[in-house]
Figure 1 (cartoon, rainbow, N blue to C red):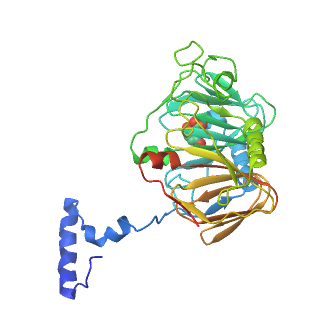
Figure 2 (cartoon, rainbow, N blue to C red):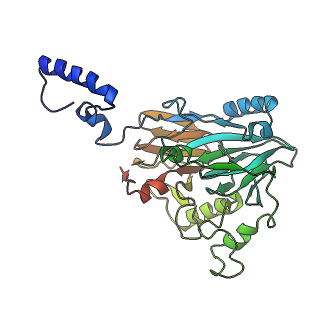
Figure 3 (cartoon, rainbow, N blue to C red):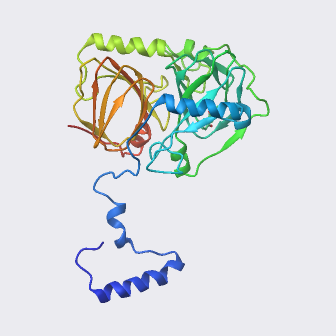
Amino acid sequence: MAQGALSNDQQTQLGALYAEMAPASLAPLWEVLAALVTPEPTSPARVHRWRYDVARDYLLRAGDLISAAQAERRVLILENPGMPGAASITTSLYAGLQLILPGEVAPCHRHSQCALRFVMEGEGAFTAVDGEKAVMRPFDLVLTPGGQWHDHGNPTDRPMIWLDGLDIPTVRHFDASFAEKLDEEAHPPTVAPGDSLNRYGRNLRPLKGSSADRRPAHQPLFHYPYAEWRPALDALAAAGDPDPHLGHALEFLNPADGGAIMATISAHVRLLPAGFETKPRRSTDGTVMVVVEGRGQARIGDETLGLAPRDVVAIPSWKEVVLSADSDLVLFAYSDKACQQKLGLYREENG
Ligand code: GTQ
């Protein structure tokens, strides 16, 4: 509302004016300015925790009713309760739990949206990116950068479940979604499984222009195995004290440029030693957090949540977060920090 009180007469005449201009698709800014240009973020997203066992149960029931091929992607969306119908877990990000049953394939497609998979359960199923398989184990991170062909398959005898993290709401916001299906169910194999990890996954990279520099130059690596990131966290913990606001924290990097894993999504892992409590911190990147190991509590804004393995938690922008670890607590998280930093929007504040 504008500064200074309006007389009744003014209000009546303005009301009539608004009604007259509405059919011409015009509206007065002064009625909505304060809600549009807020002094700080006022996210419609809510703090929310999904218990894995509850979601898993529904997902397996869906698995009895529809095949992965029929569904194209058999996924339950983790939809933020503050944004019903938006298929979003934060304002800019999407999360879903995907199930592939033994013998199934999720057919090959590609799209503008960037995707990550974080394995919750099962071992030996694969995501193939441009015909290269990444064989997945629990808590592996696998990327499908925008524009790259991908299919999933499960040749094992156990169900495979992972968390999908995508920038669907961001791409929708920019009206920039393109998608297409491959004629074949699976992309023909192009190289041996693990090829990119062998070439790009050792903190070294093939010389530019050499015949070994195989993958798209801006996004060469797409598999970050638990077997590598978990010991890296332990090594960091052995090297020094935890950061008071973050604990021991490591960000996943794109070896092409040392930046975030994808254009719109950043991801990191953390270790909070038993008994450790973080100091309060808030940041503008709405975040999806997955508990990998251990138990503890999260105070996020006014809410306090218990944390147990495989819980998924939505942390909206600018909510103050305090985490405490009852036992050694290992966390994975992804957010839109990469995107906000490019736009000059990212802010964080340590309390
Ligand atoms: O695996 O390609 O959860 O395209 C949503 C959209 C997964 C996928 C999702 C997708 C995918």
